[in-house]
Every structure is written in structure tokens, then in C-alpha cells.
Length: 147
Figure 1 (tube, rainbow, N blue to C red):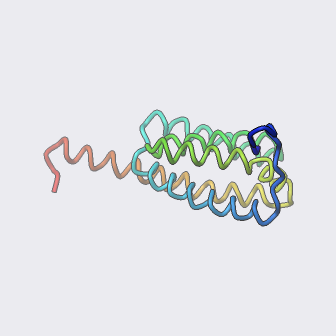
Figure 2 (cartoon, rainbow, N blue to C red):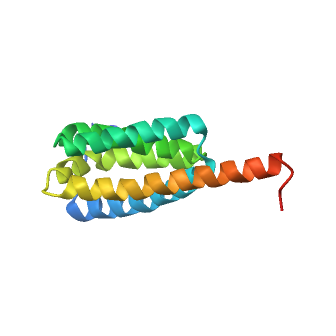
């Protein structure tokens, strides 16, 4: 949406090159969120994260792409919050909301939802490993075995 004084608000149409650039930036910002989330995710966020990921798996396996789209949005929002950086989370959410309609369209291409899900699995694995690593370090410190 573009707002101009004395002209009101108009909906701007994005060009294909703009969408590609926005998706590229979003991918890098989400990667940063995922790295921070792997370090910062809390137990309750991890539980919600796992549930959201399983919902995504179930939706793709059932061929329910539109439902996967909504579940994937929730999955990403959990990662944004778990990053522990509210500015980054808000920036990602704003950008994702701008490009999500185009992502939704893209998910209907054969094999694309499965590809997205495999990328999502790598994120899930990294967050789980990061959480377990922090828990082991905390236990070691608590028991007096810190380095």
C-alpha cells in the first residue's frame, strides 16, 4: 500500500523482480531468526514449534496445500518470536505479510510444498539441537561441572 498526501492510499502491485528481491531478503532475515531462535528458544516455544511443524508435515502429506500455507505461517511466526529480537521479528512479519500471497501461489507448483517442508525440517532440527545443547550446558553449570 502506498500513501500519498492529498491523494490517499493505493494498493501497489509488485513486479516479479521486486517479489524475487523481497523473498531473497526475507530468506536471509529468516535465517538470522532461525539462528537466534536456536540459541534462545524457550521450552514452551519449542513445544509450540514442534506442534506447528508436525501440523505442516500432516498438511503436506494430506495434500492440503492451503492449510499447509496457514500452518507454515504460524511455524515462521514462532521462529520470529523465539529469536528474542522484537525488531527482527516485526521486520520479518511485515515483509512476510507482503510476499505471503505470492508464496501461497508458488506452493501449488508440483513438489514445491515438499521442498519447503524439507527446508523447514532443517530449521526444526537446528532449533532442537540448539535447545538440547543449552539444556546440557545449563545442567553442567548447575551441577558445578562448568568449564
